[in-house]
Length: 247
Image (cartoon, rainbow, N blue to C red; front, top):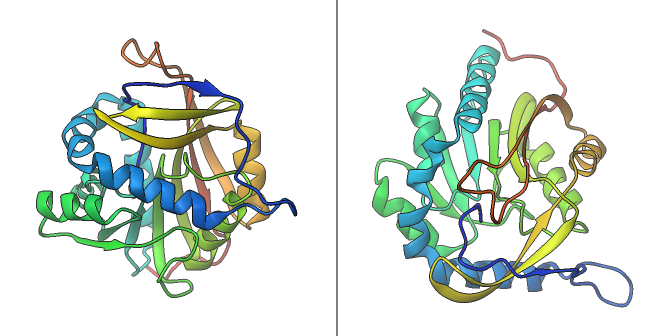
């Protein structure tokens, strides 16, 4: 789920939700994220999907990702993690991939199933995926880690590595910066949600620590519509090392 289009973007210098030992409270941030998107699911499903095709760079990276997955010849599906109302999952299907979606929000999953009844959508968390080891040919995480605190990001990337088959690819979109932005109002609803902007170096270092090798990177400037509230946007393609699948 991406928060590119929001009604309010109060900027703060918040830190992670941590206890006195420095550990991040995963339960708290997951509950807050689920609650926010359950609140805004209907409006989000109306606002965000039509904007997807407005980003030609993102669409090009999806196409390149799909080409990589097909070229590898793996038999596993592609998971759209943090799928929201399912528009990116459907786009992956249209690119010729066997794709399904996973989202933390039950109401967002309901929106996805309503919009795309021919596709599979499941409720779940990127911190603990109900998927077998080495089972996926690819993963898309399209801005779905923007609410993940820095202390939890290694757990999420480790899960990506676990469920990807050797040679499988990851496509990830994220916001570039060095701040935490707290939202009190978004998509026409009052809610409480933190958005993390990260440097490319941080994202790449944590992917590498999880055993994922970055193969391509793209940084784009905000367009005219985004300029008032958004900064640069980043996209990465990474791969889990291993032998390519048999053709």
